[in-house]
Length: 275
Image (tube, rainbow, N blue to C red; front, side, top):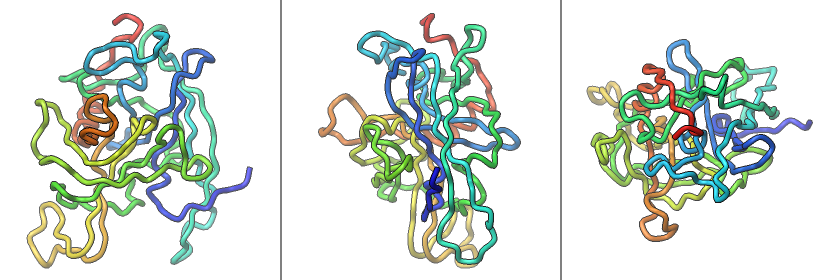
C-alpha cells in the first residue's frame, strides 16, 4: 500500500464508516475518536448505529434493514520521524476493521443519560491503540478555547455522498455558526450551522476557526491574546434541519459537552431490534 502524505493535521481525525446488516451495505457515515481522561471512544451519530430516525424512531432503510455492524476505515500513522522541525506532511496508511454493534444481543454503544436517543450522538469504548487514532481533541492538533459565537467559521470534515478528498481522506465543508451556541435548541445541547451539507457526513467532527487577534475563552485581555489562526473542536454534526436539501440549509451540531456527558454517563442503549 502506498503511504499518503497529509498536509493538514485535522484530516487525521474523521474516518469513513460503512453501515452494514450482515453483508448488506446500508449506507455511509463518518466517525471519529474522542479522548476523555483515560477513555478513548468512537463517536458517531445515534441514527448511524440504530438505523432509526432519532426523533421519530422510524427505520431509515427503505427495506427496513437495521444495522448490526460497522466497517471502519481508520488511519494508522506511519511517520517515523515525528520531530523534524517544519515538516509539512504526515504519512498515514489506512486499515479496515469490522465492529459488531451487538454483544449477546445487547448494543455496545452508550447514549445520552438524560435525553437518550433525542441526542443524535453515541460513544463506543474503543480498544484499538490510541496511537492508531487521532482523537478530535488531541493535544497534537494545537486546539485553542476560542469563544464560539454566531458568524464564526466552522469546518465539517466528512464524506458527502461517500465522496473522499482523495484516497479515504475527508472533504472539508465550510460554514458558519448560525445560532447562539451557549443556548440550547429545543431544550437539547445543540446549535445550528449555516452550510450545504449532504448525506454521508453524519457523524462528522466540527471545528470552529478564528483568525486575527484572539482572546481565548476565560482570557483576561492582551496578556492572554493569540494572534494568527486558532481552531476549536465544537461538536458532532448529525444532519440538516428538515428533509429539504435547499430551503433552510441549516445543519445540526451536538455540543462537545453532550459527548462528554455520554462518556461520563455510560448509559447503555436499547436494542434497535426491540424498539
